[in-house]
Length: 121
Image (tube, rainbow, N blue to C red; front, side, top):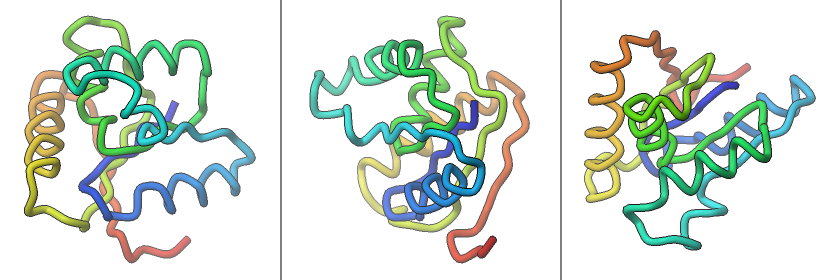
């Protein structure tokens, strides 16, 4: 599974959709599910959805929290993790994403691929 995350407005959804189209795979957009549960429960809720839906690609700002929670609880991981640079770095959501992602990166030691929002094919 490929996990794509980054700040709001960085191009995660566009990148994930393009990748899914080119590879003829399915993508799960975490933003489609985050209003269904309280904020603190979002990572666990999304991990449960991914286990059932079995997407090839997941994307969204909440992926960072999923990675951290899943690593700590040993309930979720991704084969490949991509951070999309750019977007809106100056708000509360961005701070939460950055904190979760940096903690997961430090704790997991997993390789992260970084792309710029303006990169083409």
